[in-house]
Image (cartoon, one colour):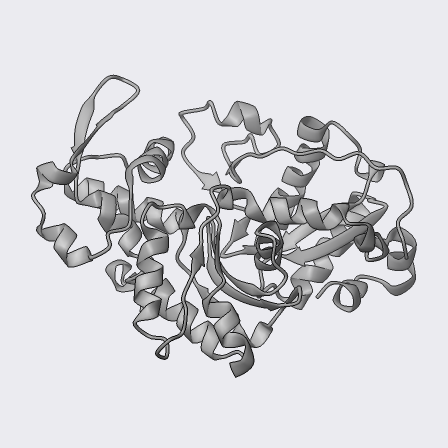
Length: 346
């Protein structure tokens, strides 16, 4: 059913963190200025919602304090992991229709939306955000589930790993309030080495950076800067028995129909903040090229805005005139129930 109503659009962005020091329902903007927090809650873990109460509070906060509108004012498109369990999909649908009372709803896979943001409907997406890294092969706008692969290592894990590497060098940034500093180091200075062993052999002063803390103290950064993101290619550095992203991409594509493989190898789209390390795209091309059959072109597309490409793809999709027939309306939900999400969103 087409959702017919004049619509406005809104946008905002913030880090996905909740404070558990008795301020769970406080303003997120205020929270980010607090330095005394002792613990955090992440309502989404490994791409899946695990704390439904906290997640609903955040959704309500987005409407009330960020967008400053009521959920009933317009439809909503929610993104999901490619391996989102059916029960989770139903529960999200239920929350938005029954608790938030939106007039229309749709759910779409993050990797597919990132592909749309890059201007394609067929291609292969390596999406790595805060909690999970996924390979998502997509044909004509539809995810191919048999080819999806997942690595439970992403941005939060890399931040923890960098904290450990800094500790080994005597730099103690271990408090919850230090995470913002470590994340800044990771996002500003870390990079992927083209050859990890050769990079390790370099003199430290060749790669050295100086970092200054808010209190004026300074310390040197060196091998931690390429050790940290190397874990994406070698999860064993973090004691994980999983293939790295290069082998995972190759394996994922090889699980797909032979007629699609060349299109996927030549159209690998990077998405998510954890693919933003300088050098990652070139290293990925080189490592995958070593595994593919002879004369198979390998291309990795690293858009500058890939940190928000999933949101961009959702914005593009929701604005298409052809998409207006795809919304699940409140009336349809009332008639069919939460199962309707499986019939309409795939």
